[in-house]
Amino acid sequence: MQKVFKVMKKPWLLASLVFLMIAWIVWNIPIEKRKYGLSQHNLLTDYTGLLPERVERVIKAEAVTDLQKLVKDAIVNGRQISVAGLQHSQGGHTYYKDGVVLDMRTFNKVLAFDPMTKTIRVEAGATWEDVQEVINSHGLALKVTQSQSIFTIGGSLSVNAHGRDIRFGSMAGTIKEMTLLTPTGEIKTVNRDDQEDWMKYVFGGFGLFGVILDVTLELTDNDVYLIQTEQLSLQDYEAYFMSLLANKETAMHYARVSVAPKTFLEEMYVINYDYTGKKDDVTPLKEEDGARLSKLALDLGRQGGKLEDLFWEIQKKYIDSIDGRTMTRNNVMRSESTFMEFTKPSRVEVLQEFFVPIDSYEEYMNDLKQLLSANDKDEDFKVHNITVRYAAKDDGTHLNYAKEDMFGLVILIQHGLKENEVADAETIIQKWTDLTLQHGGTYYLPYYRYQSRDQFMRAYPQWEQFKKEKESRDPNEVFQNLFYDHYIK
Image (cartoon, rainbow, N blue to C red; front, side, top):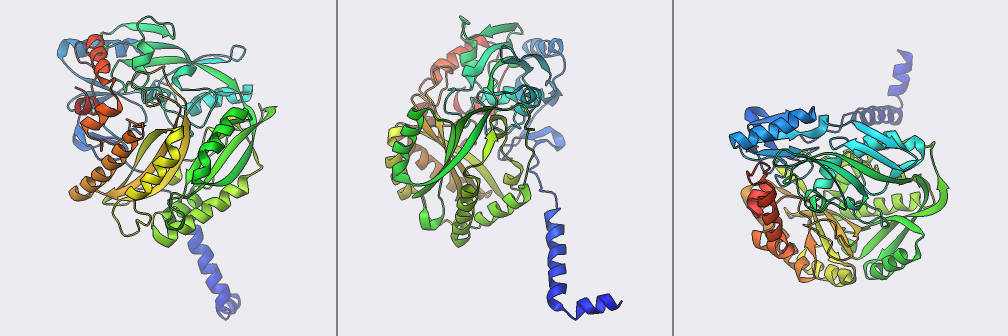
């Protein structure tokens, strides 16, 4: 009791203990995750929750023969099938009204691995992390993937995803061979020399041309990189990046643009991963680290105004702190994702991505300043982050967004869920899309359908050929989703 009284006589000590206790409690509260997928009454939605729809049922993928039977039964009975992975797309790409949803996450085996030829064959429901866990100890790594490893391989290929690598081109270009369940129930094994161009329509085809059963991936060495960071002004970035691309010393790269009021669309910082000439087969795969701290910082920036200025300064200090560190290729390709979870009632965070030709970047960003508010603290529509990545010209997929070498601007946006708030967000994003099209750019299709049908057709004039191929290869309209129904059908 005497010790307790002594503590009470020292209020600063008591306050410190209370603070530490509260901090410990807050730190250990689990980060709440967005709930999506199948809910009551067979109502399904994807990551944003903006497009709920009633489906007939969800079927977990098991054996190939069962999947083949499912397709053939759908032909006979006039049913529709949609293909789902992790469901992080945001525009109804993985389900359809009264349709059957095929959940591929259970179809996730590694079928073959050959370290000598640097190839691995894996089922489409496996995640990139599943592959990394097999190949890391052999000193091998993925050639191209997203910056996070949580997504399914079939899902990433179906949305034609891209990442931080600036040397290997498109993700589709790293697939040596694919096994496909076609809309007519056939099992086909196809490669890049396939006369029927199945890969060109399946990759970036949003599950509309059948089910990717497995793929054979080409691998590369698990290089060790030196992290090099630098702060730039926006007008210097085009020349900086072209020099970076030409000197061959950098393997991976991305940049961030300030959306803080004081430096809005003026300051940038870049993060490069430079070759060291070293390979690695001993460093373990990193786990999620510091998610709580990162989320607290992001939540600070979400408030806007001066707090967003503070968040940008925190980001810059963190980026400065990692300059000169080393990291393996596999670990660069598994960034944290949990800290981005956002579950505030009556509001939603969505992604958009706009692609612009490299030589249009500065002019485009200057025009963007006239469209967006530098300080959105008191506005419903808020821009929280702009990340810039390189997207090399892609001739390997039909609905290709990179018709030439481009910068992809990945945008994190927040807005309300009331009808007028969604409508206001749609108006702003459509103006943003028009600006992008005026600069010879495009936008990424796996996100929520803010864009009009006319904008889709202007951004993707090859949609008509896509539709013809879809009707030819899927005459019974077996594979359907809300995206296709809204923009193409």
